[in-house]
Image (cartoon, rainbow, N blue to C red; front, side, top):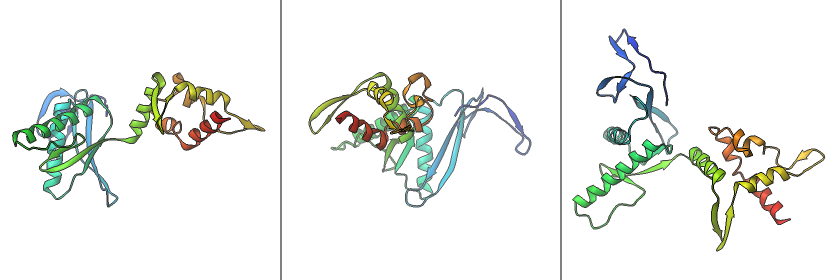
Length: 222
């Protein structure tokens, strides 16, 4: 997350904060970004922030990979079983995941393993971990790509092409009866590219909702 660069004096610790630090070493550079690590239970419903670092600009991929490995190792040492990591599709996040996957493959090669690990995992201290991109960002990413690109697909062996233009037509044709629209939640902030709030997830999820797809399929068959 982005921060406003500033410094502050902590009287209790007799220290000045606001500089770049990875949790071990501070640099004489003002920080303007924070990286927060949080754990969440899969069986039991809990979540807890466990670590944070400060950087100038986004944390570089190699540094982020180092931090992820260190934090997961620490969690394993106190008894946690880490099954997955979740992040958005930021360049540094993707680079960090790639570095961790490549490190896993190198480890297998050095040990002369006959079978390589699966492509969708990395391994830390013999524990397989699945990196996952969080669904809200995936929805926004799919929507943003569909704004400028067509999607080719096959259903039951039959090829087809999905276009943003189809949604524009649906919005224009949005039928109704006595002032009641068939899809009242479909608005120009969902359809017109210049008016779409790109950071709001709901405008992407509602586009791919069952209501929209059902009505589009029904109207296409008329």
